[in-house]
Image 1 (cartoon, helix red, strand yellow):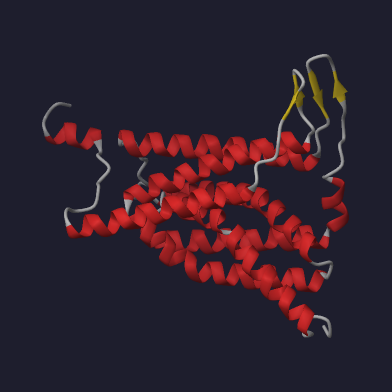
Image 2: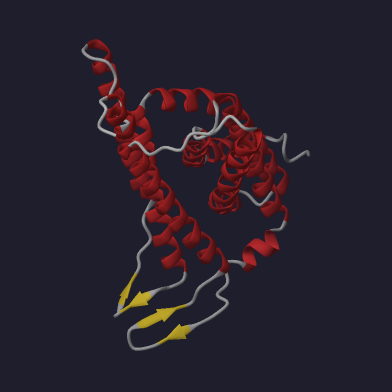
Length: 271
């Protein structure tokens, strides 16, 4: 406790909290877009539950540092003329999480553009099943994002108390901003598609990072690590351009609306 309230301890806490919030932006995007599938009265509950699960995963990983470190060690080696690989537990989690993000984001973009979004029925069972499905998806991706967050924390300080405190504070901050962010994204369909595009980029980065951690070499070509700064710059620049577009649309025409092809066809008597 004395180290936590020292000058160095407070500086480490502030720095780590800021980085945890920045690293949690992609988590908020995924949670907001996934919770949007629920009825309006359940979205806030799903977002808060998702962030609480994220906090639980991160604190658990910090308390089990020895287990997390073991995940970074290769558990199998394979080498041939055209393929060399040494996968780790961490790489497997990142790889599966990356594939899940690629599938989820691509499928959501297809549904939005083709007008095939699923609507929750009025029955209690259908709502409950939907909520459980959303929370399960959030929990799975929380685990993937938590590994990156915890490894960043370990690289900045070796004080468990500071790391846990920073995680708790960052989650509380994200819970305060997740509601406004979620409402803003839901009100602008173009931002929803842009957010899903970000998830595709993040999914690709996770797959590449998993391949790099596994020391994957195919036909003599190794997989390099993608600097996260490139990813964050692309996201920030895209958001800046989109905010300008939103402001210009407010002055000229109404916001872009994603067409529901089936409903339009029904209204015109085609089907």
